[in-house]
Image (cartoon, rainbow, N blue to C red):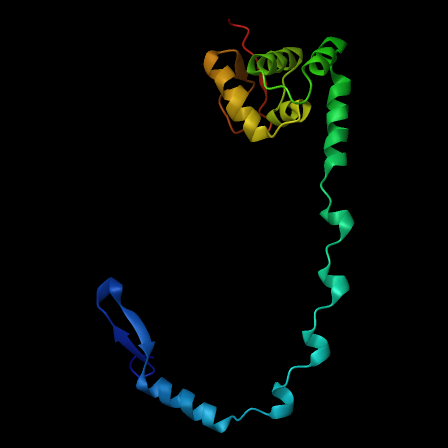
Length: 166
């Protein structure tokens, strides 16, 4: 294309770039002269250019948050817990800001059985990333919790359990 005059090379080595050449510019201007727009084909069709209201509006069932699903998962997890843990969760409440109480709950949950991060987060009604950064990672550094699969921290079935070596 460069040899036929369609493109001109600018720059050298890795910085080489191409711009339209004289031959390409001449061909483009000639094709524009030969092809005049047909008026009836280039006019916009009014009924197609207007937005269709029923297609543009969000569907209420699909736009609503998925609170029902999360609460059913939370109910399912809570139903598996022993009464002692249920009572402890009820006493603490959803808006508890006392880190030691939350850590105690996480310790008791992982003592009851190995728990995945998402399960702990759903039971505590908090975001998984927040639970991981605020509670799980510090508890692991202190040696209170450990991975169930220590060789693979990012394993899809990774869960946390108490460290019985303390």
